[in-house]
Length: 435
Image (tube, rainbow, N blue to C red; front, top):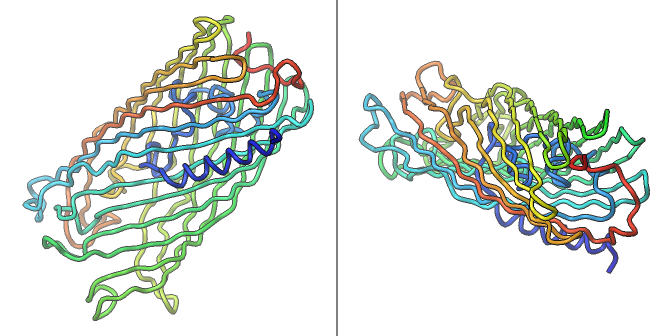
């Protein structure tokens, strides 16, 4: 079997794993940042400048020109969130109790492949889940009018072409094919056991990624990556009990236009010594494009809406790796995430807030072809509150005030394999870790 055929076979296997397991959002909004066990060890510092090896192509596809030969990587993250919504005693439905832990443990998988065609051109492929959310409070609770379970699921395929223009400049770009699915459930009333209103919809949309890497001098790499927004025209149904959409229980077909945000990521990596490399990163996500999608039913009638109206999100990170010997490299990093969600728009479905990331990780080089990565992160979420009162976008006639207590643990692992013979490979741009 050829190198390319093996890579395509692995892609199919990894895509199946990707579809089978997805978790809750662990980045601002409903984005999923856990696309690389390697980069996670730095809290994603330098993700756009190659700190995540091949998996850095999620943020900047141009990093594939830093990987000579034929490579594949598989990554998996176990996400363990804890999110409790605790209503204040003044809430009319306080007696129904809090949400319980609405976070759901889950596994998120991703995979990456690159193939060097010659000393100038590379092709690559990634299979990832850029967006996802699972929250599931108790069926009967004081905020059930605003949410029961929520689920967002996505799969993204991204082939890319990388070009090494010269020794200090590489560029890459490629199309993105993204499947997006959403299911939102809420109670139709405030009484225990009240029936649910359920919205389902999905769509496949198209976008692109692009990036550039620069090596202004030996030991320093700068990377800039862009992921485009993707327009989705969701098609599905709204199912409701009698008295909500019609005098009798009904299921009506609906459409809704939803745009996932574009994103710019900047990374810089500098090798201070042959053993020590420091990485920094910055990320901007254009969450403000979400607005308030209208849910349109038969005859163009507005059935409901999805009030989002997020601010833009920002992520700042700093990390380092240290090569203890030829086989073992350790890393650590911290990050601050400025959430796109604040009290003005915070909902019971996604009670997000600003966060601090603290991470550690390691790479073990088994031989010149095979290596393994592990990482652990703890996310410290700032205290948030929910204030659904008259004038707030979610208000449905019932005031709901609550405090949110949350934290997240993430354990990740990856395997990296080189399929060709390193001794006869075509030379490529030096990986940033080489001093």
